[in-house]
Image (cartoon, rainbow, N blue to C red; front, side, top):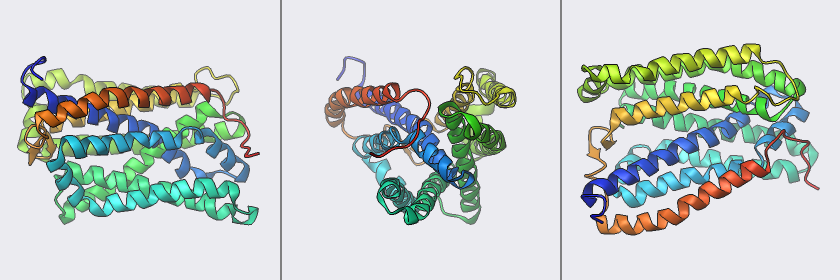
Length: 337
């Protein structure tokens, strides 16, 4: 355990990195398939089948990253797990019901009589909406310190709306890359409309976070730290301009050239925003209450968990990469025979 230094320092830090990586991958991967679910009411019946086909091979594997992140929080930072889950019990419950409803409706829409298909399409949308709104609400409450006051709840509700719009935007950019023709043209319009939600959401979280505590304000606006951090907002602005320009210049085409650029730009935006939040709250896992070092399990426990993680994480990465490789290319007609 002393190979890399003091185990009470490097082990909690390692697990914090693994948990952060799992959350980021989940937000990107499950974010786009939740976003596709949110777009269902905007498509006609044939297009809804194409939307489902575009995420069919991936959506359940994407949720594995959420399980991994919550598992790391539970076993590596049990004290923080208790505080966070207690404060967010209601939105977590809503999220779980939404994810269950998505899974059930995904299967039933293919097996139920044709007269019930519209109902299950609607249920798929509702499940996606519940999961997206609850995750945005949890994000807002976390930024506000997990305290239930009227201003904090109001901010969390705004965060819920903007994250949902952000998910629909990344979902639309995914559809651009996975489809062609009329649906691809619609997806370009959907993504163009969602840019503003992404912009406002990132700006709101970025502006609110430094004013949550004097410590975070000092981390961002002290000299020379503000010079080192200047590339984050500059890169974000450049990516937003790149995303807007690529969507305006993109023409529906079966040729895949350029169709994945908007998706890559949104992923980069999400990554920059997540990196800024991680920097703001480090070393706290519960804002201004518990650090990763105070809430970590005993080093003897963490080293055992780390050995298991070294086997589990490459496995998850491997089958995730394999599924995306096997089902690369445009989404074809949805068939169950």
